[in-house]
Length: 129
Image 1 (cartoon, one colour):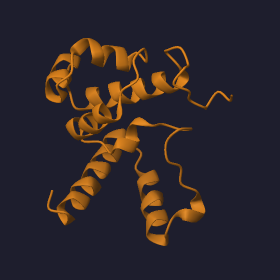
Image 2: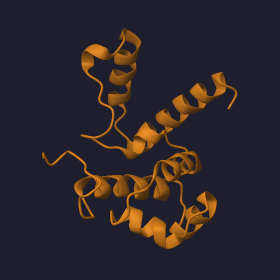
Image 3: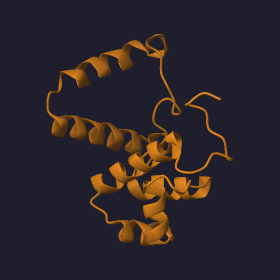
Image 4: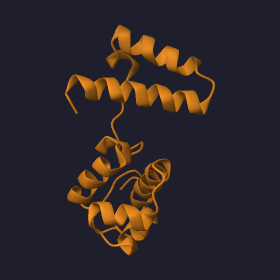
């Protein structure tokens, strides 16, 4: 079994659960939420949030869905490489490539976050969210 494969029998934490936990913590902190506040929002215990962030507890599908909604992230955000979706350069349209090139020109992390937020707001607006 390779280091990037995941098995439900693996003792926790695993590289997978630790990576998912890091993404959860990153998203929670980005939203300025404590573990307790996030737990309240998604109707889980604070200890469960802590265990998931530390990789000692694997979140179930329902938890990931409600967490993605609460943290305003796509569910795929929580699956970093090599487990998450990957896009090959050949899979990108001309517009997507142009957007990526412009994004890379932004030197400030703050500007990059603003760009992502603006694009997300635009995408949400088209669906009336």
